[in-house]
Length: 124
Image (cartoon, rainbow, N blue to C red; front, top):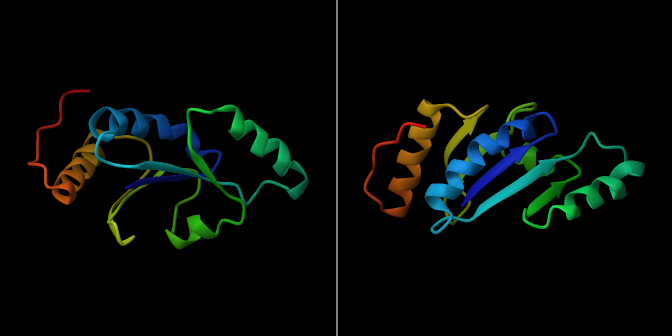
């Protein structure tokens, strides 16, 4: 599984990771997003929840307390990408906007974890 955790600011970096992950691994990995929403006031939560429900294509879990983000030690204001083993062990972690070196390292870790031979990263 690949877990993507981000707060509002960090969510702006998620597409850089989601597009190549979906292109290369949607057939073999579960890709799950978690929105860290602990800063949202309780009165606004129903409205925020409704906004997430409007995007039916995305399956995003809502972390209202920040407990999940805290468990993974997610950095604020950036996208956090975790490759998880079936037992929940973090096999690889990247934080920040998409970069080719980080993508290469993540691909090597994913390929090793699923038993695929490592492949060169195409120019993107």
